[in-house]
Figure 1 (tube, rainbow, N blue to C red):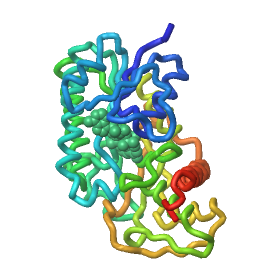
Figure 2: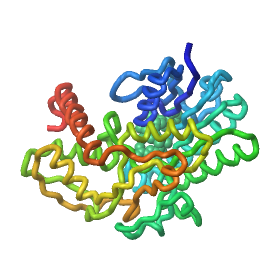
Figure 3: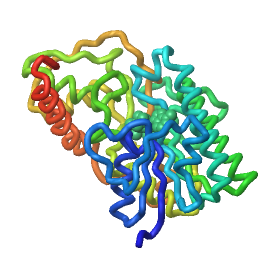
Figure 4: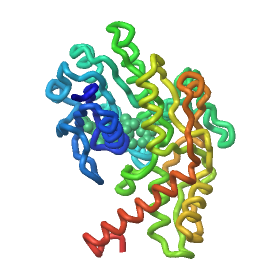
Length: 331
Ligand code: NAD
């Protein structure tokens, strides 16, 4: 007999598919829902429904009154190449807001006991992230609001939406602001991939002595959190009375150039870097983990290098698998 039941929205995506595994291992009965099945391995969910969560009928189909907890990861999202070009803005805002509007309303109706909502570091004001060496991303710095993307504005709107449902209807929502989560089974090609996966792919595709391209001067800073650490932090947040919003990220800030060098070291390759124009986002960003340390006693347990050392071979294996299927691709 399962301990509890959970609905994981976005269970065909990167973080959602990892959360399904974790909940199953903990003894939950899990239903996953997404527009698609996971890209890289079969879902471990007890039940998996293909549905479009922008539609109310989909919520009626997946969120029955037996669901104890909902993990809401479904969103129209991607890396800088998707979020910062401007061409996807209307889709991003409309699709994700529709999902969250239905979700909040329906969770109240079905008396869901607990909800997790995945917000983003992209909600933080761009004026606090102009200095690559000293970005400010403490939770209390979110206002006056000035996210640098429509993706960030939608996340901020949805944070407020969920907390309004907490105030007015008692919905128990816990919110985290993720800072660049990466690891095996994340998108690594196609335009929606993020920097760690994109750089692993570029390094993997080059022979020793070759060249990789990086957008901008590569001196922009970020921090990156390995997927298992993210899942652990979310589970701790859901087990706690603390509702957030709280940062879930790493405080190990690196320049993109230095992360590329780490990956080259893991690959045992010496490559040169060519800097080219591209969509960049803010100049500097780092997680501030003071609140999560205080409230949940959580912090990452491993260095960025260790996470990259697990991710790089996975991307190498993906490239090899693709080449076996179609020898002309990636050649
Ligand atoms: P992902 O793109 O891999 O997963 C999102 C999933 O949502 C996808 O599988 C997609 O098909 C699904 N989805 C989109 N529209 C849908 C719809 N209309 N109906 C049903 N499913 C739909 O992204 P991820 O990296 O797993 O991110 C999960 C969540 O965490 C997202 O909300 C994202 O904004 C947030 N987040 C992620 C990061 C990160 O670094 N990965 C950082 C900050 C915030």
